[in-house]
Length: 555
Image (tube, rainbow, N blue to C red; front, side):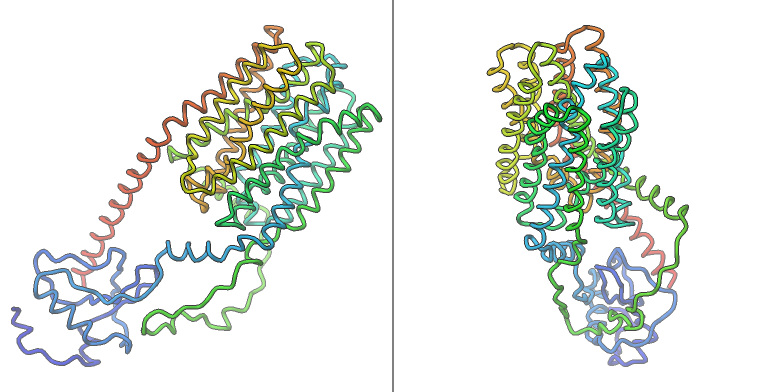
């Protein structure tokens, strides 16, 4: 027994002030810590996150003397002292409470409708590239390489809108950005009707339409998961089903319009139809407007007056105008920070899969009308094949996305099955000349595409978390963008060099198969990232513990 403890005095305010200086920590691991208690050999410090102040504080009437005595007696016995804990929520509990406040329906279904409408209209201009421009470009005798560059530059710019989009949403909001993208896409479509040379499409289609499509489609993918928790898979399945609605409705509609009004008239009408994406933009409210009200809870008997904000401070203050340079610097910093997610092996595998599959299947879809017309089929027959693939694509998206809500659903197996189906059917397409067989192959191909597209964004949420979703999507779009600068143009060059669409499609099929191989290593990547995170946490705790020991010795 320590000699200084032989004659214990009852606790008093003066004793508390002089020898037991207390600190209430503001963060999630807040505790009342006795910082001037006797130390014995082998005793460890308190909470790792404790920062010992250099000056004392006034009495806290809510901390009982018994707590101090319990701490001292525990110290005398050479054991870790029990510290009275304030009932403060852990970060995981706070995140769970925020998830419980999500609408999970209500206005969320209106947002699903708006996102579905936008994705249908986007695909009318995006995935129907071959249907819209094939007759025009073949009439101009445009090379396949130049055709591939027009489409892939459009896809590159589309993808490049992804990395800065999270920062732009934080800065300006969902709705204003979607309105801007809708107007840009409409202008791009209308101006494309008046082009007289293929190179002009680099500006009207590749640049303007690429920016417009990228903004409104990526926002439509991003906003829906923020409105749902339990029904996230179902909501995602609905928007993903209508994501190929343009591929289903567009080909017969555009073919009919071109037969009736020629290329220019049909494209002008399509531009007017695309303007309806503003209707979808109008319902993209901030999710905070529709969250369930937060129920205030008081934990324990401790004084929480210091947690209550001053009503005067709650009054919103007028923001001072910021310069464009300040806003741009903040956007750049936020974008660079988001790209840091690629330090994770899981994120790298997801990005590789998204890059090769989207590059492979979108370029294949763009080449199908050209390849079939070169083989002697009509544009109408090519449009039928594309529509068949879209029907199978849509049905598969609904089924797979709905199944993804189940606890036993395996994202890895689904991604591997989808990528292998896409790769195999692309090869089969080049080995047959019968129109009925081609339609069957395109239907199976659509099922593979639907399997991938129905869960590619849910895969990001599943492996990286909802809080990292926008960062993960932005990083994937950046990788995808550079894939468009290499994979598509290379496939076009192969066709021009070999004078065969079959060799070009075989190259695209091999590239898609890379996704299957990379997803085989996802379990190992998950384990590696977990070990890496544990090491980082241990190092952080060790550093904080050393700092606490030095602070205690100094006091």
